[in-house]
Length: 396
Image 1 (cartoon, helix red, strand yellow):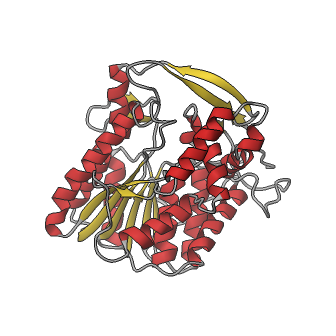
Image 2: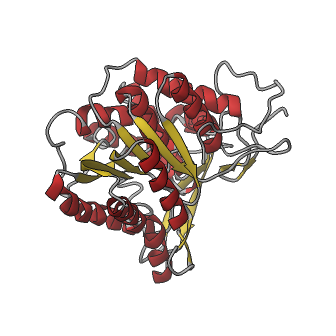
């Protein structure tokens, strides 16, 4: 099959196995070019196939030589359709880890389901014994409660009143005004149910009960705060309520784990191009402006750079990592520098459809979006006939 990108709104419905493999290798090369990390030895990553979950798995394996178990949704390809980018990413990671002599295993299934937790626990017991780092990086629009069977859907809406601001179609560069109606109380509650800390806590409880956590285990989950520009629709919106719940869960887990030397943190990361963020109105325009400024200042980071810095300079730098007043580890510090945000606001006030490519890095945003799915990657022949049915080694 000759695979080309096909888009539907903010979603790319195809992905390229060779392109995804090249993107994974690029991240591996970055980590291997840096000093080794004296860090974890057995790592579980829940939500391991894309974004920060994938970057954390790569950093642990190729930066600290850790054994890893990755959990993610199954999405294999066939002769007639492509798999998900996460599937191809995981296949490439597993092959690279195997070639490097590292233990790595994939568990495919719904992270919210008890069956997936049980399968993961049995694999850990059989293959690596206990884990000393658990990373929870699940971003989902929907959750089925494993106890009740009830399905919840998350929304990305403001709370209390409508929100109006600029947005951009990153495919065309058209800047328009948008108004988002506020979330209902039911929508807020369902967003918290999907994106809050309940499932993270359920994973830790299951792992503890099965005695597969080391006494000094570290567990982290990722959050975001962002700027004043995105505040109403993100941090003060329905997703922000879910992040508040996630952060409260981290404090609760930390209190439980610290009695035996363990620890739990929420890590606040910077704004990046992800499948999830692309669906949030105003965020692509904000990130395009942010990228322009941070690249000019030489302080831009992607997922792998952020994650390596998290491991090397925060989690495993010796002693306890520095946290903010809410107990969070901050790696969004460069994004929220006063000089960076002041220049982003200046762009925001001026940007239109006519000047967007001059004032922002929208072209870089668009390219990075397609790279999430394995397209627009240097060194890949997109006119070649490739087999979309790629197997993941060491997968159950």
